[in-house]
Image (cartoon, rainbow, N blue to C red; front, side, top):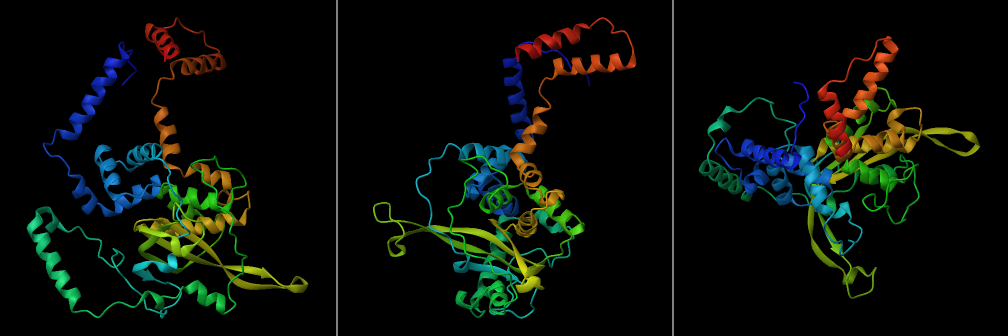
Length: 384
């Protein structure tokens, strides 16, 4: 279909907005935000992570408005986030205090506290369940009641104190590369643009906000050869992490005066990679290094991919695209990349006419008389 010059741009836009509402409603059904929040858990978690806003309800609302498009939903939530005042900064959240729902390690079969499979599709058959076509609210409620009765008869899960980190075990064994603690205040890329070379806090923040598919693809590229790294999941945790703030009227830094304001569900991945460590007299020895991933909700693939890219970017070899800060961090952002693709739909009449003239010159052809559509296009873009 060719371009058609349209007059009355405001009226056309208003009619376009009516049409998109019609497309959402023409099926005669209206999605309930609570149903999206309850039944689209993975998608809601993905949108929360990419938008850097923790609210299942608002993520579900954005998905309803965006008709299920994650990119558009993230755009909506980030725009809303930018209007919110920042009243407090939380104290440093500790994942060791996480109320764990799922915890596995691919490094060791037997770990203190045991492997906790939790909720995951990893062990499902990946076959379409056609019974879901006719599932009812009553059947769902009855199944939940039965499952909850089963839970009452099961022994309590291992206490949180028993869930020692696998990384801590490797450190005690002297098998991890030792790093100095860095208590530098983290950079905030939502308030100040990223600088290169990026600090680790900038890298981790952009990775956790990155588009899930893009982060996963680049991490896969690392494994396939752009970095030649085959990581092992040291530990993967899914659970609820407590969040506290300092007393607004008291002295900062006193933990006893802090206020617990709630908890957030997160996924944490600690990825282990073999590396060589320098010793005295230029001697080298093998040890393990870590790549870290943390994101909102149960978002396991992204957390693992984030850990792989975190380690890759720490290597800093600019000749490899997956170790180049600018290449990775500039190209995984959902709003930035989707926004640029969308801008290509805007009028480019004048610039395209210029390109056509260049092509005609190289071909040695005589430029024909401009058509009415070309002239109209030039005027319309000039007024845009």
